[in-house]
Image (cartoon, rainbow, N blue to C red; front, side):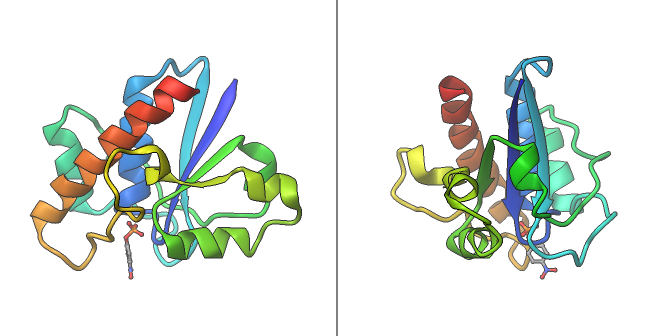
Length: 148
Ligand code: 4NP
């Protein structure tokens, strides 16, 4: 069983979508997917309504996910940790205990065709930002699925 953790800041907009999209592409008996946020502000909350809606428009249900904070033990429990942006990258790397932990952390767009490295935070923007994020994450998750 390979284990993949998607990480953003609040774990209510981007990483819940990434979790839902990758889960929709893989065999759950072979690949475990979860998500977390570097900040615990929304712990216990379900995803942002705009993420739930954009996922629903693509036939993915993320409404029962619950936000949680990234923990150091996640380095032990996951093989791959995909972060959404440079800021998440720095925050997660700062918690790494050794080189083995560090090697697990990747920017989710690093193997995508587009030149952007960061998945933009759609929290303060309009609904179209969520569709844009969906498309970026869908491409990234297709690449991840093919590499796992
Ligand atoms: P996320 O988006 O990191 O994609 O879940 C955010 C959600 C909440 C906040 C910031 C970003 N916030 O400031 O509360």
